[in-house]
Amino acid sequence: NWTMQEFIGKEIARIRDICGPKGRVIGAVSGGVDSTVAAKLMHEAIGDRFHAIMVDNGVLRLNEAKQVEHMLKENLGVNLTIVDASELFLSRLDGIDDPEQKRKIIGNTFIHVFEAEASKIDAAVNEEEKKSGEEAKGKGKIEWLLQGTLYPDVIESISFKGPSATIKTHHNVGGLLKDMKLKLIEPLRELFKDEVRALGRLLSIPEPLVKRHPFPGPGLAIRILGPVTREQVKILQQADDIYIEEIRKANLYDQISQAFAVLLPVKAVGVMGDKRTYEQVIALRAVTSEDFMTADWYVFPADVLRRISSRITNEVSGINRVTYDISSKPPATVEWL
Ligand code: XMP
Image 1 (cartoon, rainbow, N blue to C red):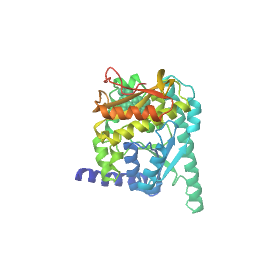
Image 2 (cartoon, protein in one colour):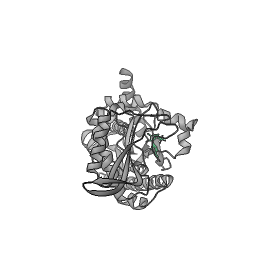
Image 3 (cartoon, rainbow, N blue to C red):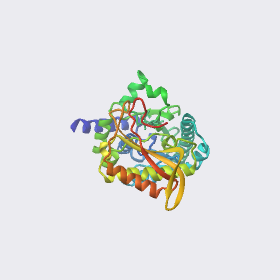
Image 4 (cartoon, helix red, strand yellow):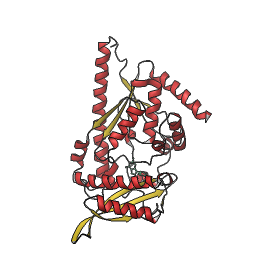
């Protein structure tokens, strides 16, 4: 893979060149492939002058913020700040049912939290440089914003608005921040997804992360079909965690493009011991897809589904029934909202 090795060398040189010896860059990371690869590349180029920010929005998967912290900070050495804003997000989302409303609230709150954290870091950096007698004006302050934009995003925003762009307001974390008064730095803008993965491997990003399924910016909020509440988030986190764990144990994760659980806002009757229960339903979704514009539902071995269903109904309180989604895209979409 000499061409990708060459790309790394050139890109690092380009980043160093445009940032200069003091320039600082901030960027949002989500734990996904693109933002992790972009962050690692920035770190290789300018070390701790790249500041990564991860916002915990309260609708991440179980233990996700901790796992991202471990990966980026401890394993990859990236200068990372995790902002736990889950209370703020969850209080704003509380009781919200409408999917576009959920997306809007999460998007706006994200921008607000990210910008506040960016100014904090900026102030801290200024303070530090004053102390070391380097406060020459404008120098060393944060001037750049990292964006993990890929080539397909570039083409899409120039010429093509696919159906999903108009049906749902899609945006990933970085895309929301374009209006900040910062210059953009986009090291992945010439790469396709496969190339980002290859780049990730060369940058020693562990294989499970390189192959991670995509996760939407609005997170579990768009996988709770009714109103978002803390209790609903908790139920879905547990079910989702069991689902993904069993998929991994069965060695099927890499055959599936995206798998997740959905929490339905209906109750069904069940039985436990000699008691009648009246509890919620989990729908499982797994698809294979090239580009997520179309997708096929994935055919699981029956014993894997049996294990998943039995664990979810036994271990997640509030759930007494599990169903499997056998819809392709189109006419369904990948997400339920
Ligand atoms: P759909 O549901 O449109 O999903 O078939 C296609 C892909 O897009 C992801 N998706 C989102 N990603 N913000 C995101 O960052 C969103 O609001 C959003 N909605 C859907 C979905 O997970 C799938 O990979």
